[in-house]
Length: 243
Image (tube, rainbow, N blue to C red; front, side, top):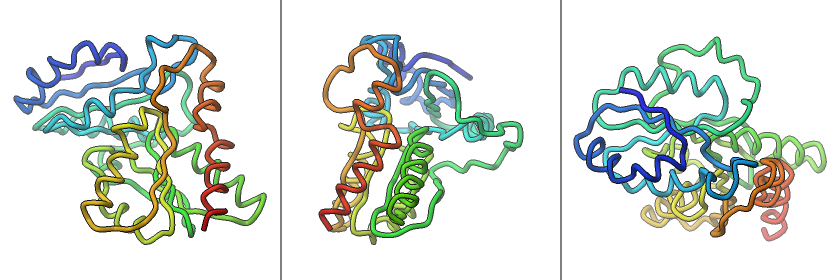
């Protein structure tokens, strides 16, 4: 079964998602459109709460594609789920320009991310389209100062890739980047995992702060939340200055 729904409209169906789908482990694919900052759609339509609200629901898998290619791969993945809902969240607007036509079944594995950039000192763990912004930020830093942190495209919030978290735990700093509420999303998941596994690394996060985002363009909203490439690069510089 497939259900395409705006992130904000899924909020109104929260009880049904829990009781009618997740509790019964039904293999439903929930395509969450307009996830993240939505620009001119306004404060009532910001799709920033879905990851935090759904992460706590048992039996749910939460995926966030970086680009069109990953979105198609996750849709293929949804064809083969047999137990429990798969949430695929993607943003309003244009994609990244990836060649989605080359995606094939089996390209995406549940709970497995990938390393986009090999680096040192800071591990940037990014989810959804923010993985592309993080890669752009690291390229800015590399050209400006020769700094090259590592960048990981997490792909899944739940289950999260524990192999990546294990690798990241050996860096001096971890920076999470997500286009959703900073409270309850990727940042919270990474902090919880590090605490549960006795890791002492410093974890910082960029995401939507604990406020309602006012109407503006998506670009202006990303800049306000430091979710553009310049904002991410600035945060990485600040972390490195503290080392």
